[in-house]
Amino acid sequence: MTSAIMASDPMVALAEHQLEMETVNADVDAQDLRAARNQEQAALNHEVDLLHEAARDVRRGAIIQGTFTLAGAAGGMTGELVKPGTLAVVFKSAGAASTALAAPMGHWTGDAAAQDDQADAKRAEAHAADARSRAEEADHHHQRMEQASDRTLSTVDEILSSQAQGNLAVIANV
Image 1 (cartoon, rainbow, N blue to C red):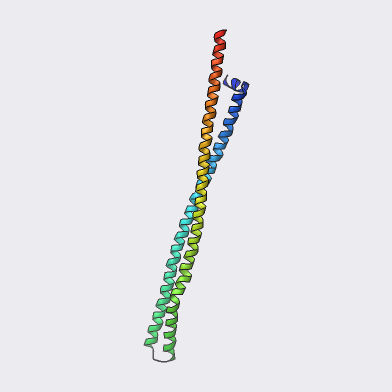
Image 2: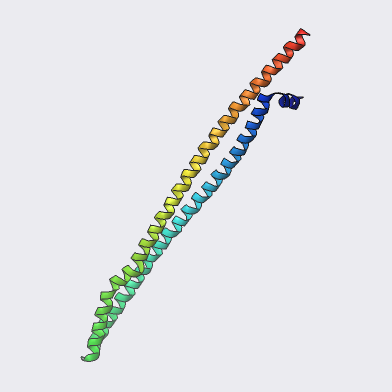
């Protein structure tokens, strides 16, 4: 009996169609919200991975710098231990050169790569913020669709209540 009333009343049919559209929109909003949240989580995870990579780069640079420093010290000590002459000068010079290269090699292999990784992490942070913004927008739109559905349902309820009262009045007059 209810479907006969809905089919015969254009306002109810319009409200029914509007509810169907609002349901579709709400489903799309929910999918958009999930996708944006997933993208945000992926971007945040990527940012964390890049920050860990930056830390590994710093450690790598420190190890390389330490290795060059040790090699320089070993060369200098060897130059002191061998008989004075050309070989001693070569060891001392190689030790001094290795020590001089320690800091630049540490920066080149560690600090520079860490800075690149931090720049990439910033980019990932921006992607996360963009995804968060899209998620908030989808959530806001979803809430508006729910409010519109509530208003439509209220209108349909009023129409059906009015029709029921009209039908009762007709029956009472018969």
